[in-house]
Image (cartoon, rainbow, N blue to C red; front, top):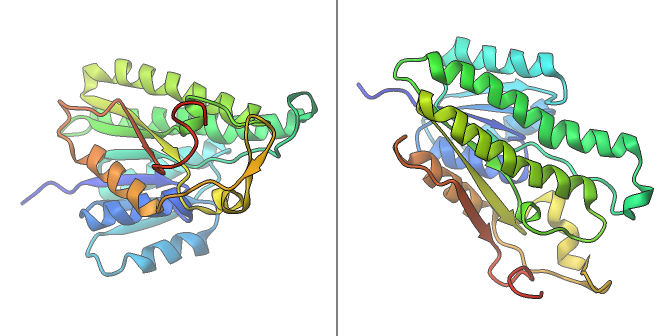
Length: 251
């Protein structure tokens, strides 16, 4: 009998997290869906009900360390192991000049986009290093902003640059336990967070221009591919983006 594959996705109720959860369910993963709103997680599960994959919904505030511990404990209690973690939950801050961003907004973005993935990674590694068969894979949602900023995006961009450091450290420290870690940098997927891009978003020269977007399902397939590799192979970094978005070159 084949070993049950178990995946955990944060921010699984909408956007990229939802697309990835559906893609992993389609691939037969028992999938743990975490997010703030139970009804959105239930909608994701209902959308994927054509698959026979097992699912577990755990409403979770990833800015609460105790909630993160409870999430991973529930996943282990239910399925006995963890093979894939997709650190996805994230938020942005209002697009204001750097000097006008409040401490509270800065801290909210750091707590959600950086501290939460760090804490989730800790809990995942504890499970993965002690289970049989040993090991697993952690995939971080980086963003094009891990490479280059948009105007007025200091909090989001800083955390996404930091995710690259978390990815590299996890990949290095996880080697001895057969834990692989990679990062997917996403550019302009169709999600609620990018709706404004269809109308127009600020460019480095100060102009406002609409930008092309790509289906979030394409990100789901990319993450499912990363997850499908044997643990002796790893996609350390992958960029998946709308082909015509202004990123390569000078815009």
